[in-house]
Image (cartoon, rainbow, N blue to C red; front, side, top):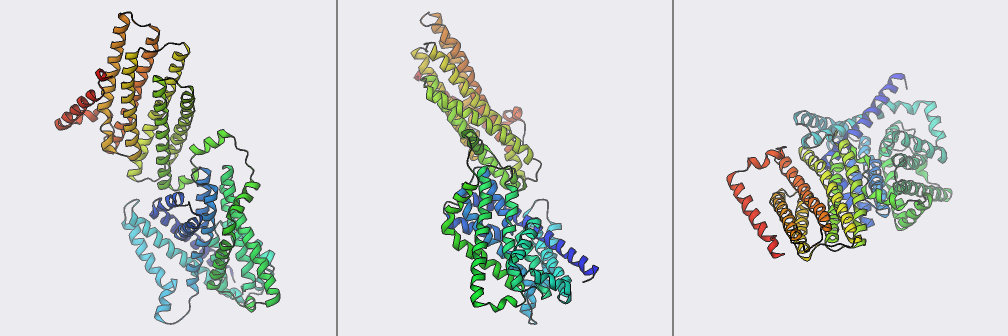
Length: 589
């Protein structure tokens, strides 16, 4: 093998790795975050998790990417550790699909059908179709993703063919033959396979390199088997690296991946060589081929899954013993709000996680305001403490979401996701302020309770009506926000104006009662604070609804929104406003 063959082999390896990366990226974009969503939601039964892990990995062509996603899910609290086990096992099975695709390069025959199956025959066609789609498509379209996938696959296969041809002459190289003989030592072979895979961080790629070397005829099964076993261990490096700095459960998920492959390899190697000592497998001295490598790779991963699947809980406990749990209650609360930055590389799915977290924040805000409204009417210390706890959680949501979305804004997002991001960024501040007002209400109610003062019976009845209206506007706003219901958002503003009217009426009524000298002036100061707070809560609801409407209509000016109403819209608005005035009439209180 001369220097030119070496350069050709390096070039083929570069094309091979680039093609694998390009194809995986394109497949992930085509999935549009749906694969990750499936992994996140449909893992209640472990056997389904195995099948899903295999399916997703087969599609994105990377067990490392699937495992890193799992580590991210566990780190963000989206997935439990027990659910992660099945996906990790399935990922090891799914990664074998790549080796079967690469085994097509070893097809030999002169018939038309066999020639057609060879990558050298169909790859140029895929490349031509791929480049036409890629160059002819607009930015971030499905055609562009399909073109990238086809072109990546063609480059991958071309790189594999180039490597195989470059190393084919090594069969006559004495030094290379001696090197392959040295790898007959199982421990050394496993070490080489593990190191190579850890360096390039892809078991599919390292198996492909081994399949390319089979073209020399100097790689025997006695050499290939330990290397394949080592490759399965080396692929764990990616998940272990990704878990650095993550939560303890994320580290445990990475350890489960490592233990699965270590135990599976140990059992396979001990059983295989013990049987070989008595049976003496003759195929070990035969030259390996690409299909044989794919078969061994598949048999090991499927066999290891069958063996260890019943012991999934033991793998979880082993990981928990390795990574001891010393988390405080506060750390566990933080993990609920946390969003893993690994997902930034998958913007579509990252945006979906942000939407889910924003919905969680909105629902927590709803809980806080509902409890606070109860406390205003009838003081309860337990409810007051719960409002204060929720307020601190909502603060964390705002901080995490705001920071994460700013990082995500620099990624390539669709117009729909960009609008969704704008709504969330504009709304989380209002949601946080609503929770602040909820806490202010309970503090005011607490002071009123401690002083032994209370509102008059009539004032209490009027406050119940106002609190009911505030509860309803929050429900309407948060449901519209969580379901992206723009029609529902149009009903927020009429109710906000009614709440302003109710607040002013209650103030006037209270002043009249004071003037008659029937009640103490002290509760009036607290009443003023509560009424101002309730008005501001409705204002924040109005802000959220208006942001949804203006951004949805690409109008970005909330001040001009109502000025653009047609006469029909104005009449409908006025009719709804009058209807709501009747519904929340203080005369009924």
